[in-house]
Amino acid sequence: MSDVFVVAAINMIVWLGIFGYMVSLNIKLNKLEKEIEEKE
Image (cartoon, rainbow, N blue to C red; front, side, top):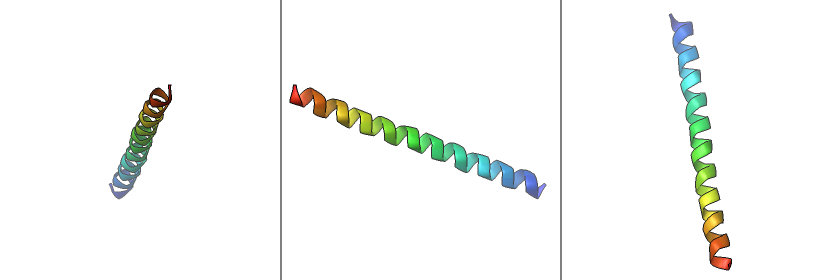
């Protein structure tokens, strides 16, 4: 029982990390796009 809980917890942490990474990448890309548009 405890092993299943540990695996599930690790899975959640990994998915949250991936999701947070994707969100931060999107924010950085949006900022870059705005900067490029302002330069043109």
